[in-house]
Length: 500
Image: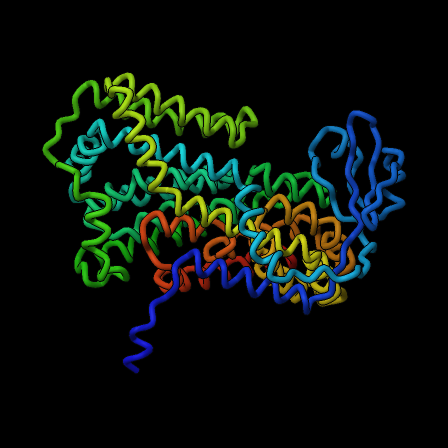
C-alpha cells in the first residue's frame, strides 16, 4: 500500500509519450486502409481524385459528384466552402501495412513540433508579451483594482469568463487561442480566493461547451454541414438549445465547486499545491500598486491585442501568423509605453517565452500522435469499421451510437475540421438509410467531438494544465461528473431530434 502511495501520476509529456507508444503498437494490429480522396482545384476548375497514391483529373460538375455518390452541391466546392480533400463513399480499400516502429515513434513528436510550428510560435510570443506586461507592474495594479470591485461578488468573474469564451467557441471555434488567457486570469482567480482549477474550468470548459454546441463556427458547423450536403442553418435551433442548457450546467457546476473551495480551501482538489501555485503566480504581486494612467494604457494595449485577435479570426480570416504578429506588436508597443530599455525588454521577453517552452513541446508531442496515425494509415480503417457498425441500426440507437463513436474517433482525429471532411461524406448517407435528417448527423458529430474535448489528451487540455502545473488526474477527477451530465444531455437532445 505504501508503495502505491509513492507512485505519482506522470507528467503531461510522459502521458503523451505513453499514448504515442500505444498508437505506434496499434499500427501493427489495426489493418492499414484508406478511402479515395476528392479535392477541387479552382485554378483549373477541375476535381482531383487521389487513389492508391495516384491522382486523376475529373470534370468539375454535379454529375461527377452524383456518380461518385457524393451528395454535395457543386457550389460548395466552387465557392470555397469545402477546401480540404473529402473522403469518397464506398471506396475504402485495405493497403499494405505501414506499421510504425521505433524510428517512427521517435520521429513522430519531432514531426509534430514541425507541423505545429505556427501555434508553438504563438505560445512563445504570448509568453514574451505576458512577461513584458509583468515587468511594468500593470497586472499587480489591475488585479488589486478588480479584487476591490468584485469583493463579495467574485462568482460574477466565473460567469463572465465562461460565457464570453463560450461565445467565442460557438461562433469561431475559440480553442488554441485560450492558451493566452491562463497566465493573466490565474492571479485574478487566486486573488478571489478560488483555486487554479476554477480558472482552468472557466476558460477551458467555456471553450469546450462553445465548440460542442457550435452555432456558426466555420471550422466545424459550416464545414460539416457543407460536407453533408446541407445548409448550416439546419439543426441550428437544437444547437442553440444545447448551448444554453449546457452553458448553464457548466457555470452552475464550476460555481458550486468554487464556492466550496472559497469556504474551505482544504476542499480543493489541488490543496497540496496551494502554496506552490500561489508562489508561481502571485508571489511577486503587490495589492498596493496604484493603477496609474500609464499602467491603464499598458492594460488597454494588452487587452486590445486579444480583441483585435478575436475580430481578425472571426471577421477577416486571420490565422496563426496574423495572431502572432498582433501579440508581438503589442509587446513592442508596451515596451515603448513603459520605457523599458533594450536590454531589459529582451531579457523579460526571452524569460517569458522560456516559461512556456514546456507547453510548446506538449503541443508538438500531441500532434505527433496524429502523425503516427496518418503514417500508419489506420484512421480510415477506424472510420470504415465505425460506419459498418452503425449501418442498419434502428434510428434511435443509430444516432446515439454514432455520438459515442465520434467521441472515440476524436482521440485519433482531434481536428474538428479534419474530422468533418473525412467522416461526413461517409456517415451522412447512413442517416438517409435509417430515415433521419442529415442535420442530426451533423449535431451528433459536433456533440461527440465537443464532449471529448473536455478530456482529450491529444487536444490542448494537457498544454493548458501544464501552464498551471495541475495534473491530468486532478482534472479528470474534477470534470468527469460534468462530462457524464453533458453526455446524457447530448443523447437526450439527439434522441428528441430523431423522433420529433
